[in-house]
Image (tube, rainbow, N blue to C red; front, side, top):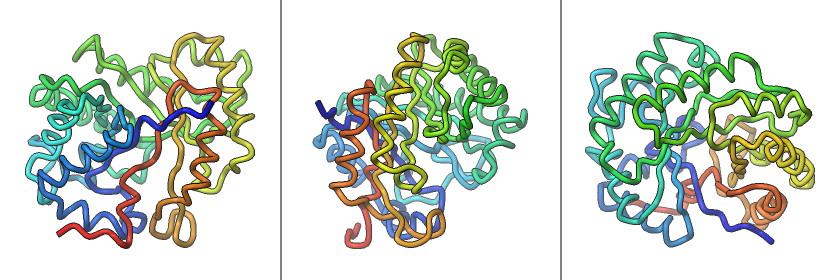
Length: 294
């Protein structure tokens, strides 16, 4: 049985300017009411979970902080609007705790103690300002890592360090990661052991169809293997990160467009028997060439 799509990534600005050619200008102009309506639209289409990609981007923050200056948006308090409207709609938000340096260098960001210091301070400040919102469900690590066969010790240490910080803020918060390299994972006993030693509540593996690294026909086999490993480990829940986009031209070097609906439907059908929840990356890509925000 095909699972419904019940979650999406969420952005105030897309991190890649070329990819966000058609929708970043629209998002920048949106006021509080338009952001709230967008969230209500997402809820109406079955979204229960929102994953905020960035609380800061390009050395500008989406909240009041001494870490970076405020981002230049038409919405004065975007994180406040997100959390308050998500709360009104009974949705859960995973708050980003990454991108506290140049997002183009995820390995450096994962290893840097200075970046970690900024990220941990941001987490504390966000909790101080917004922790009263019931919609603040957990945290998401956007400085992605690829898995080539197995997770690296560096990636596992990074997740466990940030999870430890998260639990200092609240024992109830949950951690989400969304690694790539999904089709390359060797789901043997060694990988099961890695999952057993990873302090992470949800792993939403990227299906990599949108970036043309994986074919739809491969997905069932890939996620079936992941399910066996996750079931055996009995720790992190298995989610899917379905890439609901295509590129207008060359991969990573052209604007993103909404993928054909039929392709996305086949992606969801392929992973549904094996995952606990299906998320897409991302709903907002539908704000493409032909949408106007006045």
